[in-house]
Length: 361
Image (cartoon, rainbow, N blue to C red; front, side, top):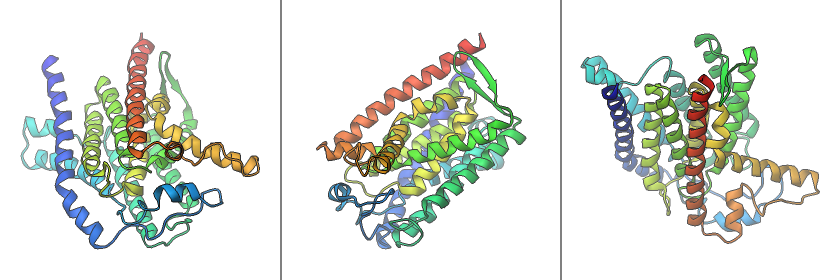
């Protein structure tokens, strides 16, 4: 038992390290391509999602939105894809107990999260390209909000179908209680969670912010999956952490590139799948609290402007920009969000693990 646990731990950290190495290795190629083709926004967004101008946002970001390439999220999902394909390939070509153990591509644990990660990232990449060339239905170029919501719900439907019909799952785990069967309602619930998690992608707005937050979240789910002996899923989450750390190495101020939609869309949609696979979807709002706060602040701001004749709750939304507007340096906002992310990730992971044990007893 002890030997097996050590081997599993090694497997997880080997995947994390490998994804990090792949990410760092491909960064020069990605960077050269992005700068050579000037793949950045050509003008700063000057209209809010709910209408009206954005003078505070323009003042804070007019020098950062243009001139810095988008699509840095490519480093994350490509490094994860390279890692999982590499270990799978080694297991096929050189079958051995070691290569078979390192392979973490499995139907029950990693097929679906890998599919959603890559599929959503490719959609995000298309959105980024449209934004760079100021095309599409969005206010600053790119896919319109309605189109993005439709795509996310479609991916959520695919995920829900896989769980319900392929994995024969319609149960969620309630910490300190046990399992609760949603029946057919599992499908719309899955889709709603996917959409809600996607909405947290608005946190990608300051150098280094989204990378640090997402690394903490996926590290927490790696711990939860490990506690449930879902080693392949834990390894997948660890590989994502490795890819994010490689991205973060080049994204800390001053950022070489931004994660943008090809990173955030893939990560948030994959996160919702991981939360369901690890039976820890009900602690997702705790573990991903920074995403919840960013999304909620946008919703509150939008509702306030509509219902209170243009009056705002925050100086600017999402909330991390509000703190910038108060005079906090961007690095202070980032570091404090990182701290909060780690704290909430640990709390959520603890509730999930301990709650599952109590529920079984």
